[in-house]
Image (cartoon, rainbow, N blue to C red):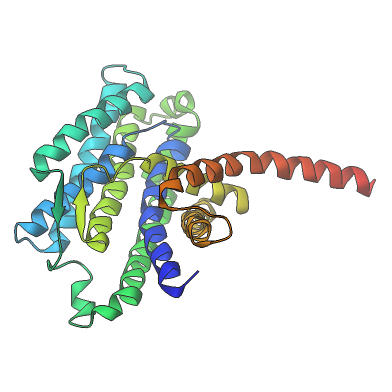
Length: 300
């Protein structure tokens, strides 16, 4: 695999690390199966691309993208906690609605951003060759800030209340915690991170496309599962680190598979590779447990 392909995989992996952190909040912290990600990721991209193409600065565009993602996540949670719609069904309803909303925001199936200012422009300047190193560096800094921010939040009283809501909602309510409010806030935070990933994605790819959110939730889940399998831990700061590393490893494995000539895979095989990697990640804990049992038996 070439250096360019490796840096590209690293760049996309860092973007999807934000998605994975968002998925971690919904699936693992809140125990809320959420498919809104397939709509909130392109929503963030649509909002950011529309604002940037309209002459707004990219930083405020990212902020508005996060607000839009938070609104999408809040809506999913509201349908569940206020209208008693099943979690999975509520997220599917919002995801479907967001497709039309994203088209309304963009006004077209795609928006090009070639030549527009991005969050990376100030550091790249006129030397476009620097983009290969500058963009991953900026994305890495954003991921570090997001991870440290989440670690600090979930160590706070509000964060502990949110974790308690996902772990045991009945006990949390007995302790005076408003579990409905925690779910609303947690889902908003989750999809805000995912939408930020979408906003950064369109700025690295040179444009937004209405179909760019397909399979987002699968990638996020794959990153979480791979991270948990490789670095199992009950400490939250380790779990968030494992999630970020899982996203990076996932994209690097995808790049290796697509660039391995002897395998004979092409870009159209991306979904097949994704399915195989996610399936392997799901089975890996069982393989590890079986290996430990065998090792223990041999030791005796």
